[in-house]
Length: 274
Image (tube, rainbow, N blue to C red; front, side, top):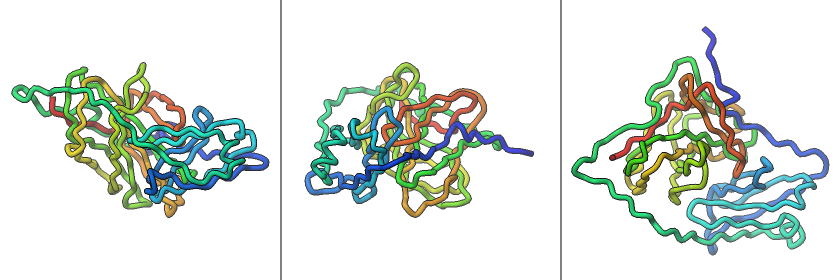
């Protein structure tokens, strides 16, 4: 029996630049400390990369990008935007981010009546997968799922997703939380750096989130962001479990636009105290 693979749903495409290119190399820092896995890109242009675990990066750009602006984005830090022409002319190689100060909105879950609940997709179809297509080893791919909690105050306890791979045994992923803006992922709602090395043996993987004290009171998107590893050269590294019907949300590059598809949805859910 043939398997139905949602390759279009979860594909990471390579970006090709024709003609002379600009190669930017640098370090992203907080003070003198490197910031790992910073998302770096030109917004709405589909061009980007991610810093390494040591905060270094290399990005090749077409000459036409000289008039664009390069943005650096990391969880817990203010975004930094620098004109590419300034980077080239001033030979900038260090990019320093400042910590973001956020005012926490208090959300209280009533303990007396609180119950443990699961929201999302707790099943998977054995013949349908979302395939991670990693054609650029220096950048991310991200998949998001809408979590509808009936707009009730909820303590997020964990998230679970179905993963499988025959090529690598584990991968670094960042768990992101995004506001639901007209049915699409919007701004981050939890400035928490949640990076986990997840096993890719076929089956459900659960990430304990209790130590991060994440409380929400409205529907949101949870994102699963694959973080690049220079040692992973394969295009199709792993797959997500999925089921027929519903919608899926992906983006192919750092700071890229989100795309919505229909026909399948990610096998992933969150466990909350509500």
